Amino acid sequence: MIRINLISEGKKGPSVRSSRLSALDVSAENIASWVLVAGVVLGGLGYGGWWLSKDRHIASQRAEIADLQRTVDELEEIIAEVERFEARKADLEHKIEVISTLRNNQRGPVRIMDEISRSLPDFMWLDRLTLNAAAVNLAGRAFTTSSVANFIENLDVVGEFKEPVLRNATWRGQLYDFNLAFNYVPVPVNVPMPGEEGAAEDDGATQPAAR
Image 1 (tube, rainbow, N blue to C red):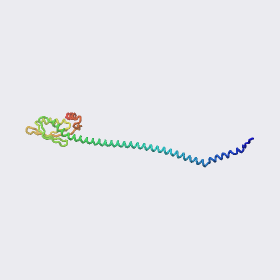
Image 2: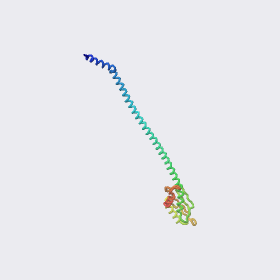
Image 3: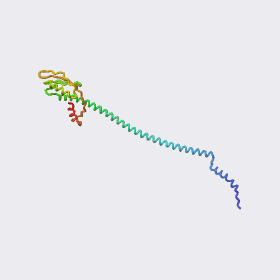
Image 4: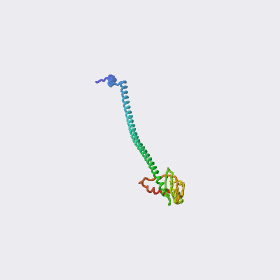
């Protein structure tokens, strides 16, 4: 007959379990250390992830700033080009104004001579013409006083000539010596340069309009 001592077997259980726990060396201090280490590791991982995220954000911001700076540089070049264009435009406008003034000044005496020549009636000729600023003085001779009156009327219809006045008319032998004066006020006209398209048409249209 086989006998089993159940009491002794039951007493062995706790000692065996304690020996196993001691083999694993599990204690409250060890558990706290492992928890601390795990916390440090997790904290390091979290901080590393946060740092990587911030680093990516900073890199993205730097790239955006670089793009904006390139745009600013391009706009500065465009602004500088526009300023250069405006300066050239102002310079050209000034030159055009100077040229127009010179052309009008040159055109004045020619215009005066041309209109006076057109206004001369028959049986009359001029001996002297003087131009002082805007004042024109004429001296000549005529066979009749009617010729002098017709001359004054012809001058009066010219748009640039203002208030022709007969200063005197003196009978000398068979002729009248006369002199008269009037003011010249140029009418602004855009006259094309020689060779420009429409120069002939403008000149042809201007002459009849003045009379």
